[in-house]
Image 1: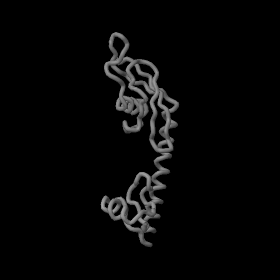
Image 2 (image 1 turned 90 degrees about the vertical axis):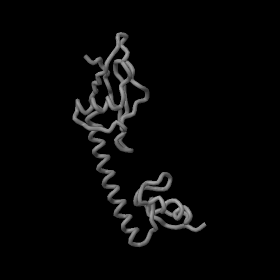
Image 3 (image 1 turned 60 degrees about the vertical axis):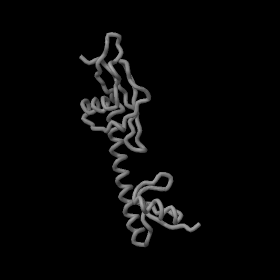
Image 4 (image 1 turned 180 degrees about the vertical axis):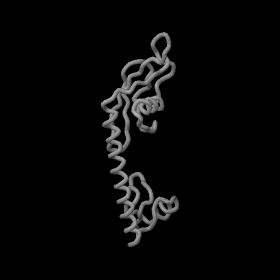
Length: 152
């Protein structure tokens, strides 16, 4: 089997990240990676370009991790109050969603998050203290404490 060095243009699961120089079979490169725009053949100049891509990726990754750690420090110490409509039995109408949590975080702290970074183990359908997990970076994951209260 003949191998070929290619430079990845974007992250490929099980192979590498953008800017990595990897060795793959010629058929895989010719039939999948290159036609889908995921990689290009490695030459001397392209390898230097790949090094610059990796360096930029590492700088961006470090900046994202630092920003995530700063947000984590601000949110871990706080309890976020989420207001929800409640029926006569104390149960919520519907449930508290990730979007509700993100809106409450922004209203109380000024920190804007994407709802996709919040993960709930189960739907919140009653009043009280609950926990969610926020994952802002592959190295930055932290718990968010929520207090669900009745809306007036």
